Picture 1 (cartoon, rainbow, N blue to C red):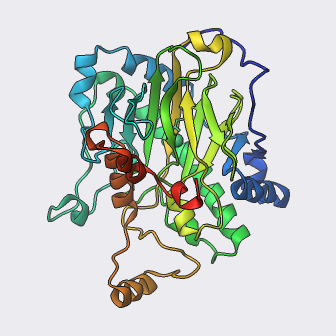
Picture 2 (cartoon, rainbow, N blue to C red):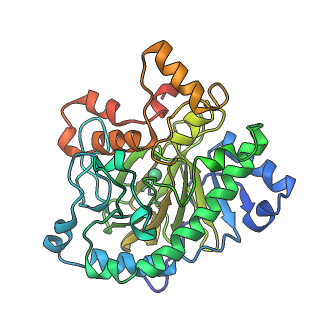
Picture 3 (cartoon, rainbow, N blue to C red):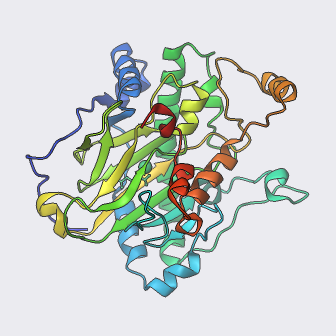
Length: 355
Ligand SMILES: O=C(O)CCC(=O)C(=O)O
Ligand SMILES: [Fe+2]
């Protein structure tokens, strides 16, 4: 990461995204709750100030992981089957309907592994619950303590946001947060990403997508993230603001809320202007609903009982949160690319909105 970050240019289109103050929101401030709701009905993206998440060590972790030799990183490769932890090499995903490869490396670490959350017997196919254990390079293992703090602080951001949105939308008290419990299994993950300087500026390094999960907490130092405003096709940059996290909603939350809020299509391109000569790292925490949560409209089917009745009467088995992530991660993989239709399959809920 550059010590002196070159300026973000002033002559590129930027998204008009609101700022929510986390401290005030946690105290139940009605004005902040309203800004949050409006942003989530509009872009589905907003800046969060006073968030109390220390992301600096994660940028150091990114440096340490991505500077390992490629053959070392490939020992932790996530593969092509929808397993979404460990290393993703550059080019493992496609960015468009022609199958063009991406230019981003990821390293994903599981919340359940870092926090030692027991996995249910049904999810592991064993007879008793077990802790989750993946192999990692030493530079990751050395930082499990700091990752614990990072994950807990990101999760408290997610708790406050889901609590406030659930309340504003009139869901029963505590329902939305109760589906995102920190101490229950979920495929939440912390991610570091890396894209090399690549010319020309504007080259797509991570293809357009919506996030799979519920709430994403993102930290950026360099530009390159672009977003589509609802019903628009013109890409706008999300200007990095070092003091703020960038938060966006993902498809699982939108499904739970019956489409009342918005998960915007976004992508990453090589940073604009002078920033284009730097390696770009980003730091992300992805929250998902707890593993067994069925993805259904909570307003129509608020209880598990309702879900069981619905499944019985329609014969349709609803996807749970884990299966949805697996399906999205698998379909995005270059190994799955055959033709234009593969691109369609790799999309989330956004293609249902007429894009
Ligand atoms: O790197 C970024 O700014 C965003 C990355 C992203 O959208 C993702 O990993 O889902
Ligand atoms: Fe994303």
